[in-house]
Image (cartoon, rainbow, N blue to C red; front, side):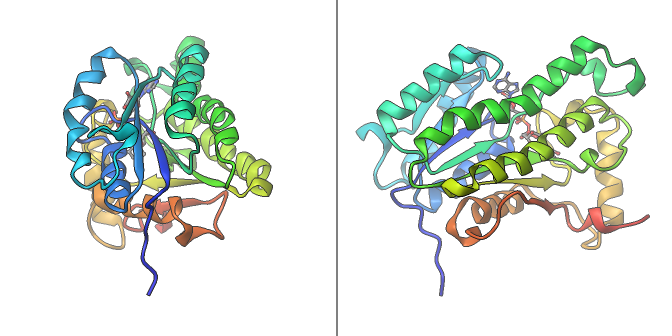
Length: 268
Ligand SMILES: NC(=O)c1ccc[n+]([C@@H]2O[C@H](COP(=O)([O-])OP(=O)(O)OC[C@H]3O[C@@H](n4cnc5c(N)ncnc54)[C@H](O)[C@@H]3O)[C@@H](O)[C@H]2O)c1
């Protein structure tokens, strides 16, 4: 039997905003598998949320980071190079090596998540692509030198990269760029045994999904049409993430794994 034991492995997770964040579901799963956790939060406003959630991890963790009871917390707005540099410096000092990165980050201006896609402004386009797509490149650049023994990098994407979804608009463009990055980074870093993959998740209720115009309809239709005839859960995404982040998937890189109850295979 193959068991997943991440004891002695270090994971840096970007994108916990609250208890509904996909990143939080992945964090709990990695923690249960024994990984040492560092959580990166966007800004001071979210720090409180992350600080409130973090203690839930310590009990499941036999050997807490820094000898303390809590996981390592680092502030990082991924659009700021100085934040990235200082966050990774802190990780280097306090964790040494990294084995896993979770990139669970997206942003678009509210007015760009509904209405006519052709009305997207250059500013809105840049903001969405900067945070939601370019950040994976920047994070990987900082993370790779800390992955001396190889590693696994995971991002979160959505089917709007491949298909037209009303309301998703510029975020679809960003996800298409993100998935292309997954393949390019997988190719570049493969010789160093650093794998790069994505989970393409079905609709899940989070802070981010709620602002997408028509999200509730999208979720209902996905459940009606998907082969499994239901929506997915946070936990299902977290377990697929565990697979892609652990050695169970040692032969998989550059992959976009759909965790969407099969919705993506349907023609109608
Ligand atoms: N919820 C869904 O239905 C769904 C489906 C498929 C994919 N996804 C993707 O999953 C990922 C996580 O989203 P979520 O649904 O958990 O929502 P969420 O709002 O909980 O997470 C989004 C995260 O992005 C972070 N972020 C935004 N701008 C940032 C910046 N400048 N610097 C650092 N962090 C920044 C936020 O702080 C937040 O933690 C996103 O990439 C999203 O597109 C979500």
